[in-house]
Image (cartoon, rainbow, N blue to C red; front, top):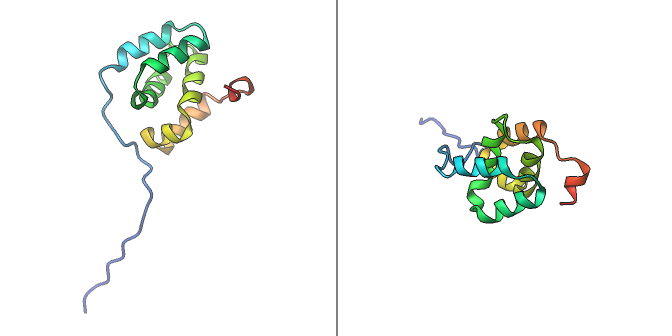
Length: 107
């Protein structure tokens, strides 16, 4: 008799792309220079949507970027985009470190 092989479905929870784009360094510098939420929204409009989750992750690892800028960026990306690009584990780390407060929920 032959052995029975069972295949089980497991949803993907890992990041979809391991490499970080080269345009991340200028985007980090531009995010650091933003002084208001409007400046951050203008920056987000100029950047490709695919870059935003990686920018949020890289910005969360830098100490020189203001906490508020990262919160606005995370809120603008949304949970679905962040989870698809970074994975559940990194999304949980971002949401734990940068919780979205009440004024940002209406953004």
